[in-house]
Image 1: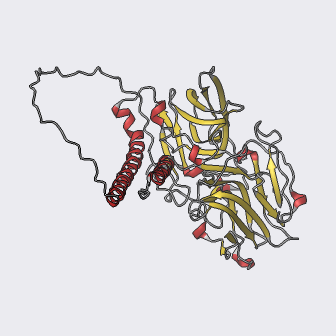
Image 2: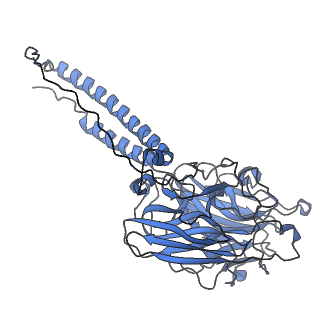
Length: 492
């Protein structure tokens, strides 16, 4: 009775599909998820619950979703604790943080992840752009890279004079995360592999050499795209059910600009944005030299979209004594997880792609695609060689020689040929090229400094009041977002 021949085809094909899935995910850009401070993923302990009031503030307050958690001290509860549960490989907190003066000799603030030993909340884990002892607004906490999976981060504020303000958190998505109706993806303006720009744009990066005494409010990932040229614009392709466009609001000069927004083939909508000059209070003369640029300015929102692919287009049609400062996009994904994310590129939505026009954006895309393809091809070759060797051994064990085909004699038949006239390609007009820098800014670690820095800095808003522990919102939150969730006392 013949012995069974080992058939490794099933395991080989399974490995092949796994390699294809991994290579596909590797070609996707890093996916970042944003969670507002009102998200149920946050748990507050020993924050003064009675002080969490809905306070109407002006539109100059630069908070995402028009909400914030602010806490200056807690007399009754000397230790305040904030917990954040998430799935992914890293996280960052945005807002403000300032240590109490050393002369008060307070206990140090600490943090930990997944019940690990507590670590000091020191400058080594704070963003190099914000730093200790300041009340600047931006990315003030960045985590190290974590294993993909469930995590809980805890921050213990032990000093009763520590100033703490939390706006939102951003998580680097992993393969274990299943998205739900509350999931929102945030895309930085610097993602030129996904966002197609045309016209005259400047990329401004607030690097380590920025004047820290003047820069007060930092954009997302410390970069913005800016233009003052009518006819400039951008396109973005996404798979989702809603999208928002955010910019920075320039209070340093009175002016206006018009933007036309088009979603897919729907009629265009034109919006006018006016800005006014805000004089800072005389009580704070040190901020008078700062440029008043405020982040998280909502320009446009599309909601209740059909699940699937969409293209949003923004075009600058009028500008007077102002500058369009584009910062980031936020959309609700219609795909269930990172592995299912469609792979889009800015070249797909460039209406006039030429060799020269496409090269800046396609360089990174082609590099990643070729690298991933070579990886898969190499793996396939190795799998095939292993399979062939295994099969030959199995056949030899049964006394069966592999089939050796016999070929007929080789014949040479003369073939008449004639020269072929060279083909002349018709001239293709080069499209308008985005001069954006294709520099991916990582959420973890300090991004590279750009030589082109914005002259002047940024000043934060200065509300006329401050509560000890409060969550401030506008009286009319944006549509598609729920109103404030009251902070909960206790660890649950």
